[in-house]
Image (cartoon, rainbow, N blue to C red; front, side):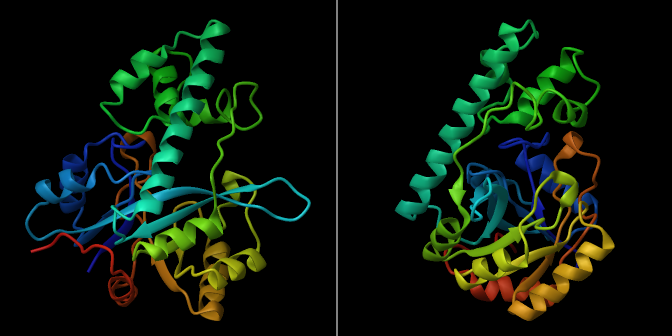
Length: 285
């Protein structure tokens, strides 16, 4: 079986609709794909209705979180959540808060860019998102379309990176609180791309151990942004902490160059996720 447990559709910051993403997954020879848009479950019903026969779809989400180390600034971390109950009141309320944070942040960034003469319009960006959760990738795409930058990656390296004068931080969820919410909703929390040093600061092993103590169930080990040494280290850490090991592409359509299915999850680890998730079920034949 070929299993990819981390993908994004246009409902968040991918470029393909949920239906198009599932067609891409099937064409790539995947047997299982998880839809994990940022801070939203809006694509779940569309994915269930559009699922091609023979493809198993895991409903999930990628949650925006923070780790708060002693004496230093917080570190951005992402939590993958699988098979949770989307109607769980506390978790639904926190997802709504995160989406509002993204919208407010995005509008502030665009307002500042426009004030300095960059040809971007918040209303136009929201319109082109087609109801998705608007974030920095949508602003980056607008900057590409207007010829300001060469690519989405170029936008993030220049105008949208955390050192840019246009950068606006978000108030994300404390990751231990996020883990508790996912578990309370019957879901399976997995720490996403935890050693992707090319993205910026990362947490250490002690933080991952604290997350495990708080209820974390898995580590995303095989990821395009992890080096071989980083994967080896995470695999050993997962073994030490008795955590599920996953692999995935973090597919975003044309917003990133990584192909769907570039990294995959072993079937036995997928079965462990299925056994642990009680809030919802995969869509399958």
